[in-house]
Image 1: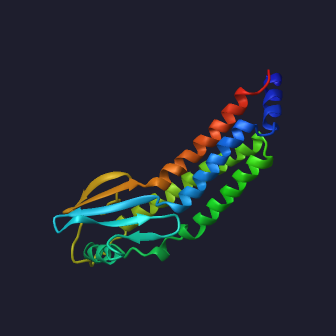
Image 2: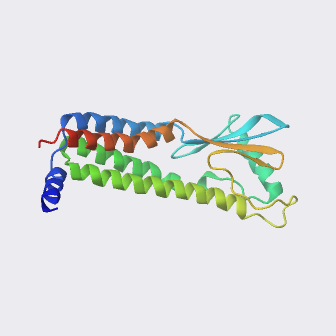
Length: 206
């Protein structure tokens, strides 16, 4: 046991290897791409909206389809069931997520240049916490919109949670929620960091 702990301690203090640095550069690129591309898209389709109403979510903004006209249309429809209007200002996550991505980019570049394996472990743990918190916050936001319905609304429906992944039927609308490229880059980041750690362990001298 003591020998195993000693080896792990030595490994954590080991500088990041060359192959690992290449994977970390790719991980840094994934962070940049996740800040540029959209993360998620929510779409509503009904007989009167055959082409669908779209909301595309970025880390820092919401872009509505049809040159921005889909958002007012969705808010008008939400008014009838008592759902509060969707407003970008209410998504406080969009104020700090870009900053957090910038921090992860700097930490990744630092680990690439002068980091040890311990810095990779810390980077991975921080990112997984950030990802879990962001996903949970997104789910809570959807839950709040679907459950805090105005009882004085013209149309009454059972409280619901808009689906976070996949499709569901809401009255005569089919709502779909699917990941966009940035979500793929988010998922790719920890995979690349783990790959860098694994390759370094494989290269560890016996």
